[in-house]
Amino acid sequence: GQQLNQSPQSMFIQEGEDVSMNCTSSSIFNTWLWYKQDPGEGPVLLIALYKAGELTSNGRLTAQFGITRKDSFLNISASIPSDVGIYFCAGSYSGAGSYQLTFGKGTKLSVIP
Amino acid sequence: NAGVTQTPKFQVLKTGQSMTLQCAQDMNHNSMYWYRQDPGMGLRLIYYSASEGTTDKGEVPNGYNVSRLNKREFSLRLESAAPSQTSVYFCASSERQYYNEQFFGPGTRLTVL
Image (tube, rainbow over all chains, first blue to last red; front, top):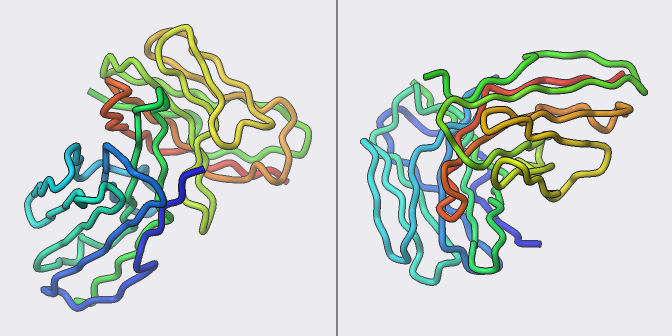
């Protein structure tokens, strides 16, 4: 099946710093999604990307759909304590009639006040 | 709107017992999904229902059955629970399969002793 590598696995940053994380796939996707999961909760959709090269923002979050269609990046600017959680990337390729999402294993973000 | 709701929130079973996890969505979405989340494994698809009246296996379907009761409800049944099924189970729904923006419920934490 498709493989998604998400890095880094975890990060400790100082409040106010910018954060970058990325996902790479062994095959192409035509949708990339980024989710955040707080402890004891379900994942919440942050950003959806549909076109290679697309750059989309949601407040302090910016995500990009890589031009090779095999990678995606998420940046968080000026981190705050409530950014703490696990961030997941997910991709899907619907060309072959399959609409399943493949998830990365997550990046655990800790913010030091 | 409540979004995606799941019951129960917590459950403890003994090996061999059966139970049904319930999921409902009020967003008029066509597609619904069941995932399990295990430490270090990310989210893995168990079963999905592309539309009312259809169900298909995902990545890890063994030991589970599903029922798409109507457009709103999608249940997951464990006929004979095993310790390997200890996990957090998430239900999700999406409006259109192609773009696959999935919205998740709060999860059911299941322990099988």
